[in-house]
Image (cartoon, rainbow, N blue to C red; front, side):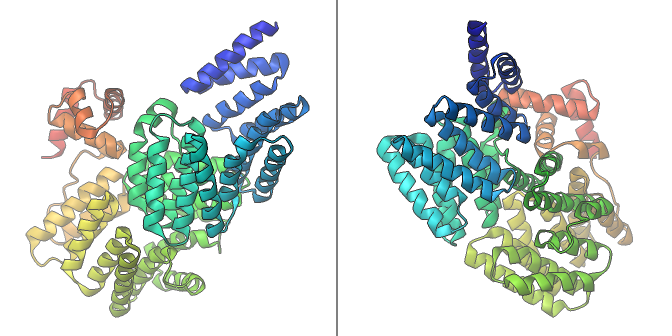
Length: 536
C-alpha cells in the first residue's frame, strides 16, 4: 500500500508542476485519505490555492507544518510557515497571524542553522511591514544575499519588495524600474510558480498605490502566456481586486466582473479586502448603469473611505450634487489634496461643482489635477484633469488632450465619456455627430447602458441619427474578442491574428470559438458578415 501511495504522491506533484490542479488535488486527497502524509497536505495546499479554495489552502499548510515539526523536518516546516505568512496577510488581512508565522519561521531558521533560508526571511520581513523605508532596507539586504547565493527566485521576490517600498516613498521611477525587472525575471520561465504569484501581486498593489495603471495593464497582457498554461497569477484577494480594476479601466468588463465577483466571494470575513472588492465592483455596476446593484454592494460599508468615490458617483447620477460634494470634501479634508488617492476625489468634486453651476471652482480642480499628474508623472491624472478643465471652461483643446491621453492609456470608457463631452460643446453638427456616434458605439460595445442612452438622446435632441452601431449582442464580447472579430472581418487567418495581436495560436483559437459561441454563429464567414452588417 505504501508503494502505491508513493506513486500517487509522485503523480500529484507531477500534475502540480504541469498546472493540472484538479488532477493534483485528486491525487493528494487520495494519499491523505490513505496515510495522512505531510507531503500530501503540502501538495494539496498548493493545488487548492490555484483552484481558489483559500480556506482549504491555509488548513492544509497548517496540517503540513504540524506534521513536519513532529518528524522533525524543520526546513519543510519553515517553508509552510512562509506560505502561511503570505496567506494570512493577503487572503485574510490577519496581520497578527502573519507576524506570528513569520516569527515561527525565523525561530526554525535560527534553531536549525538554515542559513540558506535567511534571504526568504528578509523578503517576508520586508513584505509584512507597513514601514516603506524598512521594506526597502530589508528587501535590499535580501537582494544582496540572493545574488551572492545565485538564488533567482529570492532575487526576483526581493526586487519586487524593494520596488514596492520605493513606490510607497514616492520614488516611483526607481520603484517601477525594479518592479519591471522583477516581473521580467518572474515571467522569464526560470522562476517557481509561487515566485510568479508573489511578484505579480506585489507589482499590482504597488502600481495601484502610485496610479501606474498603464504599467499594470501592460504586465497583465505580458502574463497572457503564463495565464494560458497555469491560470491567472493574480490570485490573492487584494491583487485580484486590483486586477479587476485594471480590467475595468481597460474595457474588459466581462473579465473584470468575474475577477471582482470571485474576490468578493473569497474575501469572506476579511473586511479590509471585502470593502475594496465591493467598492470596485460597485464602480463597474455604475459604469454599466446598474445603480441599484451598486447601492446594494455598498450597503453596510457606509462611512468607509474605500466607498467614498462610488457613493459620491451614485449621488451625482441621482442628481444630488450637493450631497456628492459634501462627502468628497470630508474625505479630502482628512487626506489633503496632494495625494494620489485625492485625484479621483478631486475629479468627482469638480463634477459636482459643474452640476451645481460653479464652473470656476471646477476649472480650478482641473488645473490642480493637471499639476498633480505632471508632478507625479501620472498620465491618468493629467487626462482626468484635462477633461474636467475642458468641461468646466468649455475648452475643446483640453478635451482633445484628454481624449489623446485616454486613448494612449487604452481606456475606452473614459475615452467615450470625453468624446460625448466634446460633442456637447460642438457648434458644428458634423463634429457633434461624429464624436457622439463614436461614444455611442463604444458605450454599446462595453455594455455601458446609461451612457449609451445619454449619447443616443443627445443625438436625437440635435436632430441627428442615433445609430446604435454594431448589433447590441456584440456587447457580450470582451475587448480582446472584439479585436479578434475585427480581424476576422478583415479575412485574417488564426496565425495572422496571432501575429497581429502577439498571442499564441491556441489563445486565438479559444477567442474565435468564444466569439462564434457568444454570437450564435457557426463559421468565421458568418462572424465577418455580422460585423459588416453592424457597421453599415
